[in-house]
Image 1 (cartoon, helix red, strand yellow):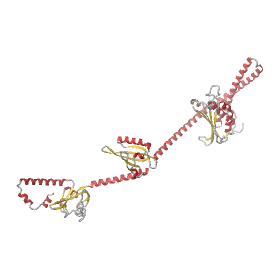
Image 2 (cartoon, helix red, strand yellow):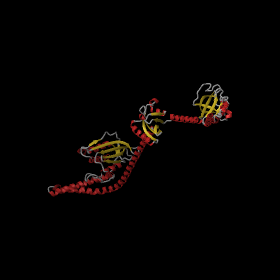
Image 3 (cartoon, one colour):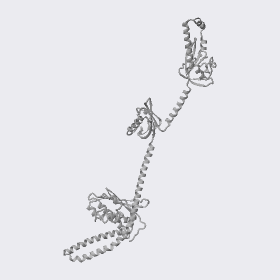
Image 4 (cartoon, one colour):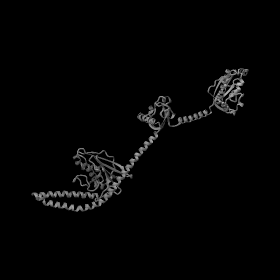
Amino acid sequence: MMKNSADEMRAPGKTAYLHNFANDPGLDYAHRIMEENQERLEKIFSSVPVGILVIEAESHRIIDANPKALEMIGSHREKILGHICHNFICPAKEGECPITDKDHALDGSERSLLTIKGENIPILKTVSTIGIGGKKHLIESFLDISDLKATKLKLEESEKRYRDLFENVSDMVQMISPDGRILYSNPAWESHLGYDNREIASLHITDIIEQACREKFMATVARLSARQKPGLVETVFTAKDGRKIPVEGNISFQKEDDKLTGIHLIWRDITVRKAEEAQIVDLNRQLESMVSEKDRQLQDAQIKLIRAEKMATITGMAHGTAHELNNPVSGILCAVQVLRESKQLLLNDRETIQAAQWLEAIEKAATRCVKIVDDLNVFCDQEKTVFLKTDIGHILNRALHALEPEIEAKSIRITMPPPPQLPRIDADPWQLERLLTNVLRNAILAVDKSTGEIRIASSVIKDIGSDDPMVRLSIGDNGCGIPTENLCRIFDPFFTSWSSGKRTGLGLTVCYGIARRHHGDIDVYSSEKGTEVVVTLPISHPGRETSV
């Protein structure tokens, strides 16, 4: 390949000179060395993976080309050697050669190679100038960088796509150094937190994290870094203006040679999600409260239904009992009165005095039986109920006045805030006073002397499941309370938790009968801190009677 060039540049008389000294051993060795060097150079010239052209600088004629150059140009040696490189190998026009005409130096410069088909191949070209046979020649070497350019183009396009993605995504993208300095942040991060580029460059990651969350955040980052796995982290950012922004972020780690070089974080503002979660928690709490309340109401309704069925059964029995007791008790009282009158004049002897004492005891017992019969009659609705427009506040004051000696005897404090303007209700004043008196007397008996307190409150409410207004009267005390196991029996006739002889056991039974007769209700709530009795009565009664 270099042989033709060598023949062209061979000086006259050189062959004769070599022939004359062919028999000289020293010269023969030098000749072999020259041939071996030439052969070695030709092999290198032919096998090097870089295209090489030898061009005469003055004429721009191509005088040699290696196989790689021919491959890149897409032609044979015969079609290239002796041709001018302008508009054939080099796209430069004649007179505008960057080397010979413009004195440029090309060393690893990106240029174009013009193929035989007129295609331009991007190359990395180096041109050096040497003298051969007394003439200036250009040695051009070039490397095909088509694949490199294509890869670079794809890389640039990919980089542009990712840059556009990071620049326009609503998520906050960050890159921080291993020591926590912020190296990069996208516009979404800046718009959310309000910092400009100059301020960001001076920030540490902990500068934007809410102080109460820093320790947990750093512990999570350290744990994920030790595992060398990406993960999810949740924290709270503090914006420049002081706003607290709850965020959730994906964290990943960049390493080179097993050394941490950067931490990538993609944050998402979860303010709305947190608000929705809080709202869901609140709604669940409300729902649980509503279900609990409905369950309580259902249990109350079930208890009241059982109580009503029980009372309906007891009423028939109580009616017969009252009727059967009334006549013999009346007879006993009459007999006691006759015997007492017959003994009045004979009270001077001991036996007669003792008999009079027994008559008094019998009378007291019989009177107590009359009271029980009276209560049973009230419970069984044996009396005609008279519904009149009644001031419940006035009835309450009458009951308190009647019990005033008992209240003062135990130094009980009555707490009764000014009641609202209550409407007059349809009620039997006598029965209503009896109901309130019984409830108040139970409260007086329950509290301790000197420390006792009775709380009274009233209001107008709407009945559950109805739009009809009702008057609600609450009487509470700070007494010993009612054991839970007794609450379901407190309205039963003759059931009492008081000591023997203290009460008849018909007080709350009578109260229940009066409340139901007025189409109202009575409920008892009790704990260790005391008992509350709640009486609810309708304001109007459609079937009220106005006469006895």
